[in-house]
Image (cartoon, rainbow, N blue to C red; front, side):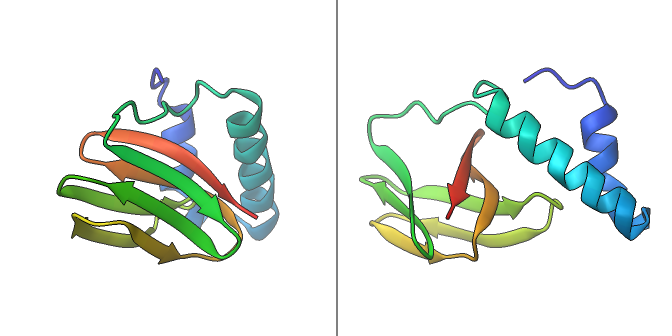
Length: 109
């Protein structure tokens, strides 16, 4: 994803925006992510599989990896080194899962 600076600015400054502006930015970003499947790259590694479940995500791995999970406000929800299959409980929403230096969007329904 190329960084035009506008989306990251909106995410980084969302706490300073009014409630209605935050809602507009949130829904615009969700539509952008859902509409453009290339907005966040899918992690391309045969040893790592990320999938959503009803109350979170499951990361299946055969190697030690650093996993970070962020919500759309940019707040870190989870960070850990894992080396086994791991279930991460999360509320419904859209998350960015970062594994080592790659990222993938995950929708928890």
